[in-house]
Length: 193
Image 1 (cartoon, rainbow, N blue to C red):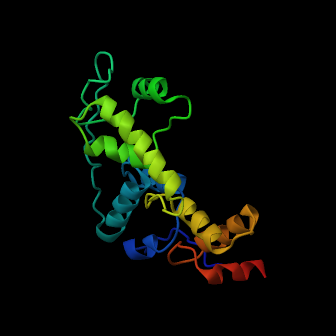
Image 2: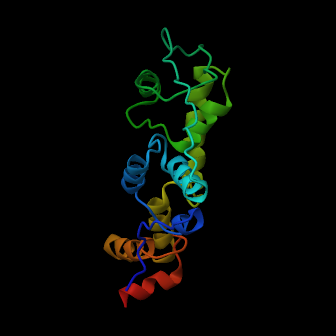
Image 3: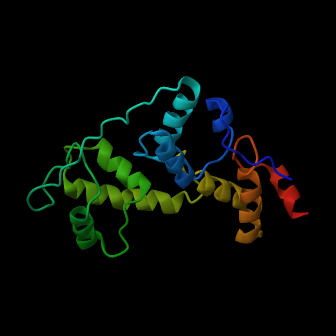
């Protein structure tokens, strides 16, 4: 038996936040209540919790549109201060690095933190980052807070070598339907007994 979340008239922000919600559910609530459904899951959750606590409808934060870069990307061109991963950038790096190139989290972070350096330096940084990644396969990549499922599944497998994805998903589905946090705990395995 679960205590799965139910939308109620007397719901407050704290109770609302104590359950897992899919983005589609949040968007539907926003539409029914005249709230903006734009933005990421974290932003929408904050907007709903504020509405539940105060009755006030918050406007979404203004988003500045990133412009596409003009001209050709060359080795000597400087990395833009408002860098955005684009198909043009992907094509440049694939030409330099090969088809194995991906915009991994560590490289994206490097690009955003190193505007003004050249694309040649960016290519060198990519190789360095990938080399460090291979050398430190135990280092966790940070997963954004909105990706609770991904974090749960990773933590489940770190603690349960040899278990199946089916087991992990069963535990996740049970966890997300209960009140409280959605982080993996050893006691989540009780559902498998």
